[in-house]
Length: 181
Image (tube, rainbow, N blue to C red):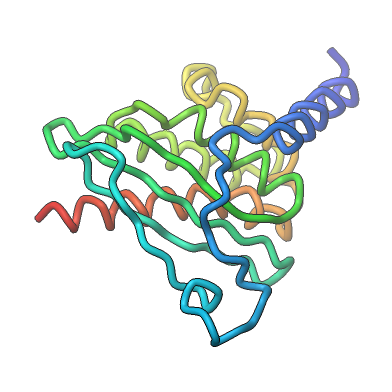
């Protein structure tokens, strides 16, 4: 397959994931609306665990360069090995950030925390590849559809868009684990 055909296929996957995002729910306040009359409009929200055997964590991420923002919630099992039992997000932004969040949910939902952190590390390496990819078929296989962001890694200003959700997932997991201690 020619390079231009591959890039077009990658763009189509990103656009499709952005149009039909997985794991997106509407629960976060719209922080673009400034009002101090109501606490929920002022950016405060409450996290409630959906499962009694899980601990929730939440993280809000904002990319000041382009205005993308996302709030990521995870529920992590309390038993070892800790597992991501549920991951959802709310937010708005460009197709790259929205598609990355969607694909991340597909990759980490139901995985152990260790597996999710490894996927995050691998995705970061992909974003540092400057479009060259990882040169490791096994790692690229683990990343699944996330390899479509290889082309994004050529553009430093867009890398933050792709990493937004992954950073939120790591922070949310860390908060959930800290709450268990």
